Image 1: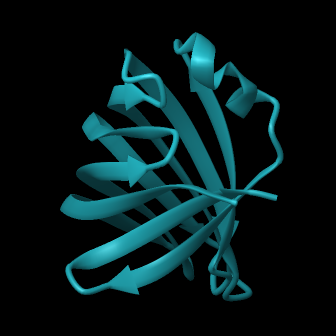
Image 2: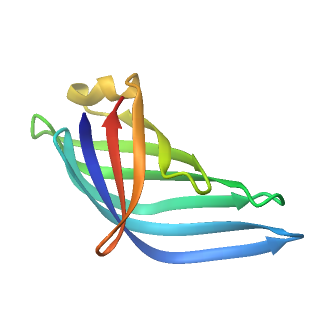
Amino acid sequence: MELMKLYINITEMYELNSGGSFVRMILFDGRCEGEVFHGKILPGAVDTQMSEKDGGGTLSARYMLEGWDCENNPCRLFIENSARFGNPETSPAVRTDSPALRWLEEAELEGRLENGDSGLVITISRK
């Protein structure tokens, strides 16, 4: 069951190379639309990507959103989304101050990364 889509806009990027691997920090903003929540990504969102010397690597995006829950009450969500390079599937974890969305903190969620018309789109669904 699809819960929300995040539309990502990259704002800055920083990178360092270290002996055949790299660390990249990608700052972003954007918006979220969905059945359970709609709102915007707050400043400070970052995707940290770390490559491994064998060519693999990990990413961990952390971001806070502000908007309205499924009962149209104002709230915030914190999402940490983790994945491996080359795999469009992600493992999102959510925290919230919304009583109506508290179940997201315990739910088994999955994410999917896709390139959209105007940038990256992340779809978060319930398994």
